[in-house]
Image (cartoon, rainbow, N blue to C red; front, side):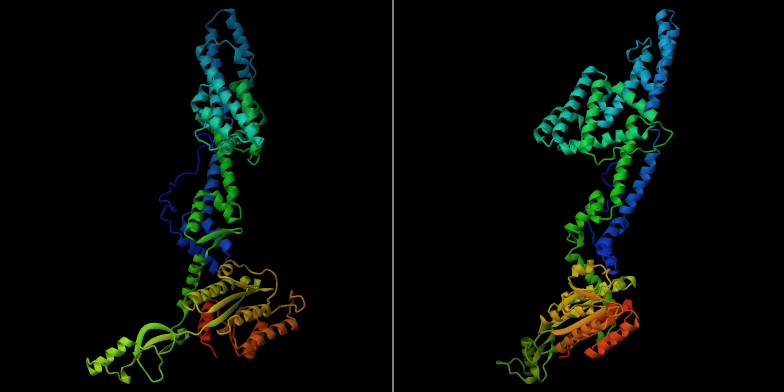
Length: 633
């Protein structure tokens, strides 16, 4: 069981939550809900990984299990069990030998008793002094040999998984030569690898000759080093977890059991592995306690498990979600499936929601908005007429004076036949004409300016703002594709945002509300679409406190607002008004200075001011867009 008790493998906790066919839409919806509530995309993805998809266990659950397993490993037993067992076997051997010697009356028996009486108290030194002792008792000799064979087998089996049988027979000189040859070749291979030599052929030859000792079947030297280094580090951690006396005793017993040749090759191997994998924890000891004595392999296995659990916990403590996903197989499967189904993509900043996911996210936002819209004229945004140019709706009605084509030819002839009968040619009357219903939709250029200043998130307004902007962008893209929407975010400076950038945007931690810059960008957007109805919608919770310096274009901030800031903002308002734009402002909060400014702008531009509750912001903005896009021209 050494080092192999806990390994990642097939899921055994019931139905695999990630077994094909995968359905990760719930995971995408969970991320979307957090983004719409005002969380950042990066935090939402990390939270999803920590909670797990649909509550089926994520990184937090995995970390809790890892900590529990670590506590259990620390209570596994007594790390000094190898020395304790050797002492017990030595006592048994000595007792059996003394019983045999007492039955003999010769001087050799008395001399042997004197040798036994003067053995060192140290188990390792006693075993060493008994190496050349001529045992009188066969039982005692076999028990003494069990000390050497058992510890030798535990050490070699812990280091090389394929030595289970050979390790027990390592007392055989032929087996010892075979093991020493394998370790010599291994050390030569690792030395060449450390010198950056090409070891491809050498590795293949090594595995051909000694592959039975490595059931893991490593593909190259690096994989071989990975396998051996963790076990070597666990053995080193075991030694450092013992007291000085215990360490000295165990080291002495290992030297005696392995013999000079094997012990030398093993020491050289540990040196190579430490040099090739210095990142492993070679120095740290652990306070493992318990009543059950642990053999060498069991003790090293417990420390190997603790090391693996420490590595896992370290990876789970990392902040970067991409790194966490890479360290955990099940969550790496989730990432792979999210990417395969097109919900996320990876760039230099980590995982981001794909356009497909953003469409789903924006659609959810729009459905929430429309669920709140009241019925009636407020929701009647299409200018429907019949007999006018526009998109055909599939219905028709009797023609009226002033209607223009298109005519519904089939229904017109049908009405004529019903009126006059089946005559040839068919005689048409004015009353027979039927026209096709069409809907005429005005084209609009819309600029939605949203406040990204820190006060928006500190006052709980970030989520409703994002939901509103995503809903409007989805409405334009799906219902009014002839409209041109641009989202402008503004803090100390303003910038245009794509839907993907909007979903991931975070508050501007710099002070400043630069509405002047936002309106300037909005005006540029409107002028790029001269034939469209110009509409500007502004969502903000603070009066302007920043503007662009006319000389160098740098943003200037000052609180309370400077007259220059107000004047620069009003100049942009006047430009939009002269262009004929509808300018409506949605004021969040009850700041008196903001109210005075917004009210003055609304009057100056002949626009409107709204003071919606946060829960109604999306409804207000979408409804006003639908009303404003009909146009005043």
